[in-house]
Amino acid sequence: MISSVQTVAVNILVTAGPTREPIDPVRYIGNRSSGKMGYEIAAAFAREGNTVLLVSGPTSLDVPDGVDFLPVETADEMYGAVASHIGRMQVAVFAAAVADYKPSMAAKEKIKKSANTLALELVRTPDILGSCRSRHGFSGTLVGFAAETENLIANAREKLTRKQCDLIIANDVSMPGIGFESDQNEVSLVYPDRIDQLPLASKHDLAHQLVRAILMLHAEKNAVND
Ligand code: CTP
Image (cartoon, rainbow, N blue to C red; front, top):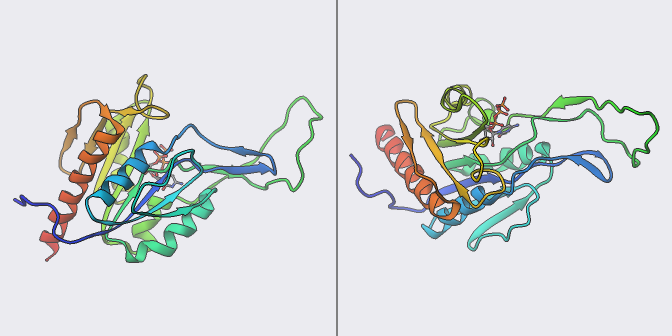
């Protein structure tokens, strides 16, 4: 059993915030992610003395102290930023709410209203987290989120396996007062061999607990691989 978590600074990548997928020059497909959880996690890793790169979609938050910042807008841009930097990372935490689909073409000019209905064709965006092991050969500690409205643990387990993660942080976004846009969150940590349920806490306090759990997992993984 490992009692002390940290000995040396770890290179850590965190994704956060929503992505925006342009429809035309003034409109986009977005989502309700505030980015708070990811920013708190990046800040907590930096406070523990690690080297942190925060790749973030558009939010209204300040960049945390001591964190390198790479702003992006679309899922494709976030994919490119992660692909460029994942090679030198030891831990990667994917807290971003990435759009799963984008318009197949963004109109060059503002779309004017005419007919009563307007159909948008959407195409899949890249699975950024899902590409880390399979495309980029990432062998470090890989952590994803699962924001679900039903079958929380089963869906989180499925993502853990499909995206080859070491840990999925699962939260039920159908519960009022937690998750998206809230200052509080309540999550379950879904590991391949166990589940730890954490009590409701502020995102600030929860980030500290998550960072301790992730660094512990990283230390255990390295101890096994040594
Ligand atoms: N994720 C990602 N790239 C995507 C979609 C998701 O990196 N294009 C990451 C998220 O940051 C999160 C995890 O994958 O860490 C799970 O995201 P989620 O949207 O819940 O999973 P999906 O694979 O999109 O599955 P579904 O929407 O079908 O539940």
